[in-house]
Image 1: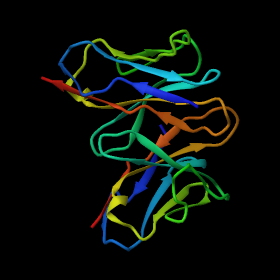
Image 2 (image 1 turned 30 degrees about the horizontal axis):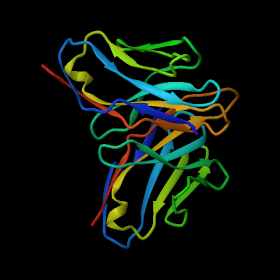
Image 3 (image 1 turned 90 degrees about the horizontal axis):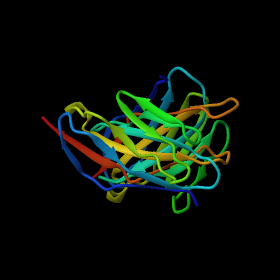
Image 4 (image 1 turned 90 degrees about the vertical axis):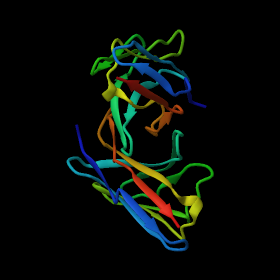
Length: 113
Length: 117
């Protein structure tokens, strides 16, 4: 079945450091891939997405490229801010008609001033 | 983006009572709504999928008589936790997506923290 594997956190960085959060997936066909962010006590917000191989999703300085050959969708940001502290979830939506999202375990990011 | 409102944001109830959580799509018609449960510091576990006017489809291991889901209109779905027990304490999140052809984005509510005492 479909699954998503994310690097375990927490990830602690200093402000303006470079961020990478790894995400790999297992799925048949060409799923859509997503990164969601969850701030404390809140629901999830879509951060970025990519729907086909080699697509690059980007938003608020974050980027992720859909790599079919490595089944990966790593999240990157060149210079993190304190306000980026949150939990980040990688997710996929399979190619069936259920529209279910399968989430990774989440990675907590803490950015220190 | 579209808005999904979940209510209440926090609820404390006594063991044995039932609690209803509402999920509303405020500015679009949600053909499909999903209910998730999130344990502390863990990922979201899909509990069920509901389509407007149909019975919900529950994921394996989720008790449908325990977690009653109703999706009576295109803008409202409810999750009722019946005869709640402390182990039901969790963060419950709904998401909603519009219908139509092709894939549309799912929008999430802000979540409901349920504490059963």
